[in-house]
Length: 302
Figure (cartoon, rainbow, N blue to C red):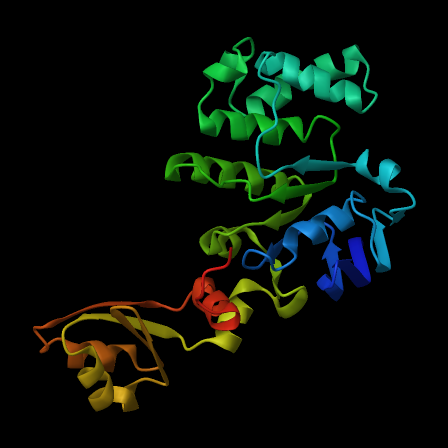
């Protein structure tokens, strides 16, 4: 069952088409990732799917409701975690949840009944009466996630949910998202952390310049777009080593002071490097980040 679908979705600002006729389907119970460099069209796509921006073309269905025609009715049934926390700084943790629940037309009795579970989910029961300004960044992010669940949505949109968090807080958010998936929730996730996408997403699509350039399961994308092993080589004599050992690498890429060797023969490459005292190296399996950089390039996007 498709919980969310789009066909031929388009949006233009001025002379630039920022979403250029994309199709997508999100299935019940999966985590679907939307990846891309800055300016790829991810945020605009999210806004179109939520009915916050009017499309120039295409069709959208959210939980069997047409968007934007029935966008308000659809948004009542979904949860949204924005990229930046927009909690009310004058309210306590509890009051933020209560106020948000009222936006969905929930009675105070309904909200009160849901509060213990939401606070427990966010591990903030001990902070229920604390002011927002006293919370750490990780606590605020967990509260924003819990707030998005106040209406018990089946479909949840998360826009870069772990940006700015330390590793401990990031891993805790990942645990909470896995718990939601285990409960049968459906998640649409945008992120700049390739490790996050690789860990959480059942399927994902990579966008660039408003178009879909790749789509599939993370492991499938890695296997189809990149060699299985990557050896990063540093030090003096990089170019000479690459010229003399290119036959071991299916693809060589020089980036600054690093030479990336993409290969099916990682062990042979590292054995050859063992005798090169002027060179250092790191050998690792290929990752989703390698795929992302190959498809979208390494140039900075502003």
